[in-house]
Length: 446
Image 1: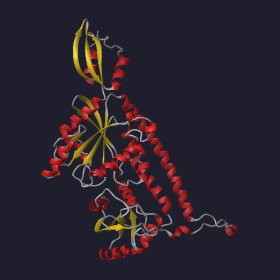
Image 2: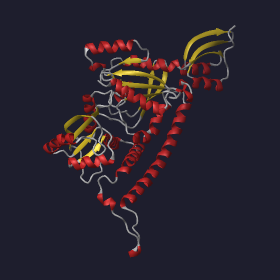
Image 3: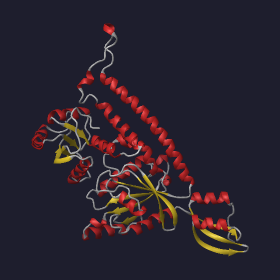
Image 4: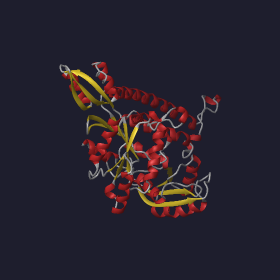
């Protein structure tokens, strides 16, 4: 998918440039950013031979980097035979073209790199369409960057023909047409997903969605809870396509657990738009479980990145007070993962912080430590949404009593004349189903 006159393949030598601006107070550690950029490049099989971290006083419109910085990088390009330079920032088409001229090699920015990873990892038909749409959107403004033949014009018929349309205009028209076809296909997939979602909503089972920064351990935690074998490696964006499995939680007979794509800082807007239909699974969940790599040096910054994307999806409630209250927010808890990688001092601090909160479980998805506590916390948050009702049933209504025992948590069972009164904790949807089916409630308590 890398669009260059020279093909760049897996195993190609790559050099990474990580810029930081003096005028910005970035919440991230520069070395951690460099390590993440290296991980992104390795995720598509690039051989990272050098990493340059640069501090910029200002952004240059033509090249982003200063002349002296370009001259400092060039010797490594020649020394290691670099075929691809990855700039861990957003580049304009002009900056990308000028850097390619200065370095004499292919250049891509952070957005292009993430698009390459998604293009390689998407497994389902819908995922591939979403990635292609994002890639076409990204490329639409960059056609003039590398391909000089696009400036040629197609003439009319014979010598009377006018100048016709340029090749670049024709290619842009082809991209627009292809994007329109993909959007129609994705709209069909979205309608299908809505039908599937409506069926799940009619079912009595709550939906739990795992979210988190890429490589935080979501898929490992998912496998630990479900006994599945979803791909889980120490690799950025190891899994892209959402996966759903049935799980059992304390006091909850059945729940649906959904593993979603990992988030990342500066996630390309093209990808957020293309994957919105998939991310909508998060907005309809009964509980969001935010899995964090709690020992990562940028754990707090990663939390902010995930929260920003959840805010954009509306799962944290209206961001503007005029739009409503926070009642529409989806219930959330945090899972602080990878505690097995912490030293004794770090572990003590993490456990002390977690003990002050009632929405956090500290675990190691790799070893299984704390996973049962996490299951208990998930169940507690789900049942906290349930309604406690007193329901009168005759002794002959065994089917209704069995239904309540299966779908809810029976807190008390008291005899009352020819029947008994059950105090039951029910999901709101189950309470409505029971009312429709049996329409019998306990008489008011005298």
